[in-house]
Image (cartoon, rainbow, N blue to C red):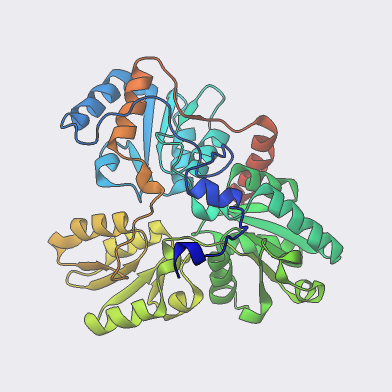
Length: 394
């Protein structure tokens, strides 16, 4: 078909499509907005020295947090490394640090701001370092979902449980409606608590962690779970389906962990006889069901630390971490490979690179506060309530 023959289509791009194309900006999105100022050139051979000099000049005034999924060039400057919640707690434990530079993504920096004092300022080197999973549940969509549950006559029976990988708005909704936050390591404890409070759980925003915890760890069936799709009327569910369900799972997922498939597992077992498959619970249910070991990022690290020399492992999690672990344990004779043949980094996490880190540190060293992440007081109060419920879990 020639250009002249192509019919004109009256298709209006959605706000999300424009955001992805870089034609619009949404300050409330996990994708954030562009950073102001000029960044150093990524080819500058002095970047490492500049980062060290700025960090040394700041001294105890700055505390740099590095998530496990960060690239090596950034993680070398982290004072502590860990998963999102561990890092937020580490920040709160350093009240003398005026600046918390969070090398992670937006929702992690929000959690750090919620848990730290008002005198501390949380900085995200690149505001566009967001989380696609967290973006899959907006405050407006979740409020509409609650209306659907109310109309179905079950809202009073439902306890929301939200994954740490969610925006401050979603954490605040959770706190306001009597729910709690969970991490990938304490999801079962959070769900046990929730079912003591009510008959059903609304699990946000990662359907896979919710399903895997309910079925694999708590003995529920797949039939006990339904998926609420915010892009369909009534979530694509009937009132009866909502009434029958125990777990109402939000239709969200991690773009990295969601790519692993049963074929990935079968292929690596064929290629590497005797391999142990170790995956994160954000993976699809069939992947988790076929794996040898399943657990959080910290669990993955500890499992490999305890593994015998000469053992073989295929890891289903973010590639920066897998590569770092492979290099770390190679001298012990442990063979560690990425579960999928296709290389996949967390694209938003990787936005925190050395130029952005240098720019942020140098700006702070010069007395210029940049890219501050600040949660409003009302949102902070309810989000902190939900986080405190998690901290009180047995």
